[in-house]
Length: 361
Image (cartoon, rainbow, N blue to C red; front, side):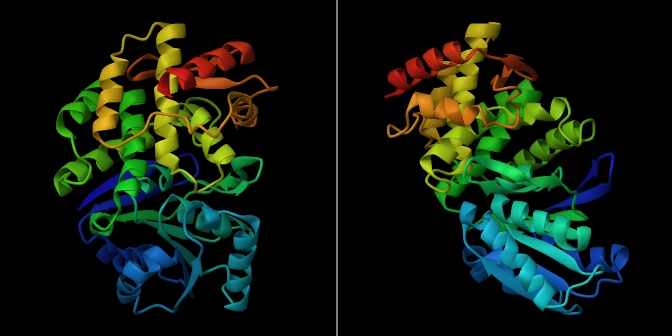
């Protein structure tokens, strides 16, 4: 197992990464949270059926309750958030209690926001079960969705630890592998040209990627995330760079309906579009066709869903958290590893998006 230390202004905590990492949870609690009164695990039915019993086995010395919520983005609603708080109160959790997020990014976002809100904040631990969560579980962004925008209601609230068991990733379906690996690509593109070249050369099939390759990818991605959040915990500056591909990606998710397309697959489309803009506006030296061909080899689509209109997507992008005064801001690349936040005129953006959708149709 590998331990990566996360440093932020408000807290330092470990990411424990590797096979059988779940066995580290009880020793971590005994050493760092020995006065825990009760533990509430929040998970969904898909993950709970596979892994809840394994986590409970590791927590046999503690009083544990669990709560099952809907799968995917359907967990990140006001109603589910309220229900989790109700269960916590009914189970008589207190200020010394602990929440555990067992699942993917949606479960981590929900559980973290529940922990941040319950009694004005109690500890929580992330137990990610998806590739995607290597990004979302680190850095302390927790939130639920609003019909008018993704992750619009939330907080910055760091976990006590992230315990990332690689064995939990073996059962992921192809769609979820693609969704998660998009964030690995993002980390490489915004931070490290050598990491990006390694991905192009070594990763040719997400279904047959080795455990060693996967752990190496996740470790590199987590270290990129740490290097950013250590300097800008609350997204006042460079942390916005982690949203590369997300401006259009979030718009696609929201406009199509949360859960209609996976987060990562929408972000891939957003990254391709952001790279097109980077080449045109910032003269990025980048072989976009090579990147798109590689994406297609891995099973990604780079098309915006035909049911979505350019105008509606622009409206959604105006609700992006980076937007200031209705002026849309994109994370673009001056070079691979050198991102920049760039304001784009709405009319220019509309024309570029229209052209992209026409070419990819």
